Amino acid sequence: MNQPSPNWDAIRQTLQEISALLDEGETTPEARTTILERRAQQFAEAAISPIASEVLQDYLTFRLNTENYALSVRHVRAIAPLRRLTPIPCVPGYYRGVTNLNGKITSVLDLRRFYDLDIADAAPAMLIVVEGAGLEIALLVESVEAVVELDPGAFVDHNSGVGIAGVAAMGLILLDIDRLFRDPRLRIFEEPA
Image 1 (cartoon, one colour):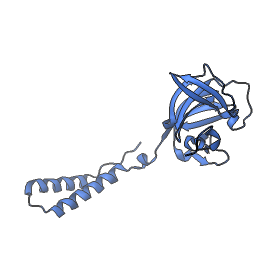
Image 2 (cartoon, rainbow, N blue to C red):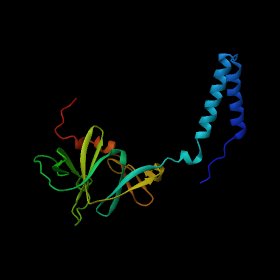
Image 3 (spheres, rainbow, N blue to C red):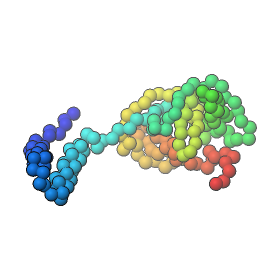
Image 4 (cartoon, helix red, strand yellow):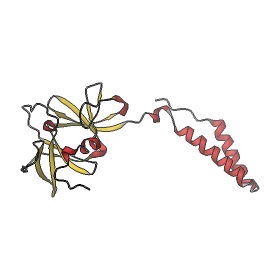
């Protein structure tokens, strides 16, 4: 990667201005402010490079049936194998029940049922505990694949489903956890505010 070369003339000029400030002591406060503002502007311009402007983010990828999904790692609180699931009566079928994860009872959401996907032969075996929109829920998935670094611009906006933020060219479906967890269907037995 090519880094921009430093502007040595600007650096020399800044050092001379600083030297003048330190040596003279007679510089007016307005002159000092002007010099400091110019220095701040120079440093700000130097910090913004074409490489730095391409912000890559980390996404956790996982599988549901034959599709690959991703979600931002900033929402992930834990990943664990599914060990024991206790069903809860009188809740929608996409809530599979609750599980005990490190002493904390956590609701388990089956995304296949929530999105009305075909239930494949492969049984979900992993939990991804995610937090967003004031909820912490374990997502029941078939497998956790990897953490990948992608440009958020790689996902084309796609509003075909609740909580679906976009789809990348490689077919990776991006979940927006905050948007998904704001869906009123996930707020079971919640008292109105």
